Length: 197
Image 1 (cartoon, rainbow, N blue to C red):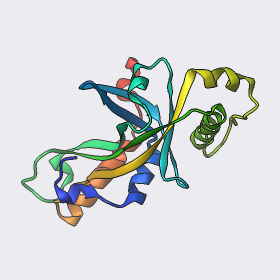
Image 2: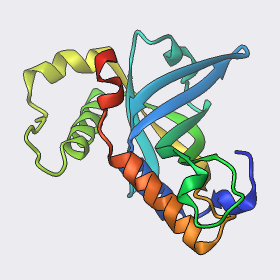
Image 3: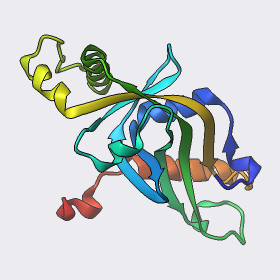
């Protein structure tokens, strides 16, 4: 990602926190100069240090996801417009603050149906937190049919890149005000586009 350096985050734990809070990633791959993009949830496996996901076998992007293929996954955290009115300092300009994580790595397909089932169970368990109102069991009869329609895979991460643009070039007071604005926007409801749903 484009610097500047003061927006770059190198702390993997902070980036992992973004992945866990915003698990819907944008999977990007390329074949014959044509980009393929799919939005799917990912889980971060702390033991292996890998991303785990699955994709529909009918998705044309699957043809780009062979063992060893290089892909990038983009995780988008909160973002918002920052009005100069939130700053204590004068003579500021409008800007946009955001938290983004880019992970690049190599694909490893999970060809064993049992491993694919395990990945689905782990994904469901993670996404059902904290209430766990639904538990996906391995002996669920629907699993036998569903596992044939998905391709599970892991991504061995080779490059971590975090960009946390949080008005770091401003005073401490203005940075705090910008962060408050970002948190406020992140908590707002979807009333502004509810009719589009």
